[in-house]
Length: 234
Image (cartoon, rainbow, N blue to C red):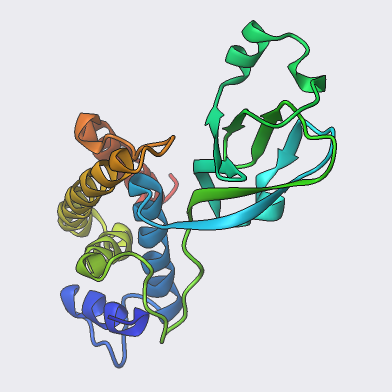
């Protein structure tokens, strides 16, 4: 389905007219679809790409987002076909307190958050590495197709219904939370598939274990924030 087709289904599910909606603007619905796709990509790591990462000479740190704006987490890194293994800052400090100024062919790398990147040893000349990483989806307009698998396009309908219903008050919120839970069920299913595939490929990072997460705490927080947003000030 295109973004527009998903938008129309969302409006139909909330009993609105897709050709002349009154409960939500087109921009609101598309923003909800985009948010759902971004959340699905983050929870499942279902979108990935491989690109060339140029390591600067004698430099241990770098900004990933400056090079790859859609970067989420690294999955595998190789230099000349040889695997570079992940390591935390604590690991490197315990092994070699001079790792930030050690020259040589990189054997360890790591990241913190979505941006901070480090490598050791540091190459003496600029060196290219093959980096496979999980990515966030590009922004969509009406005629774009979502990047998540086609089988999960209906999941974006569910998330869109939840998001649009947040401003409807108590009844709309309760119906929307049902759709949010269904969306998270879909994410858990997709995440399990990606996890099995990633383990077979020996990736360095696996998707979040949604089935171990206490969803009730998330739902309670969603309801609390929606109540605060929809309750007029005294």
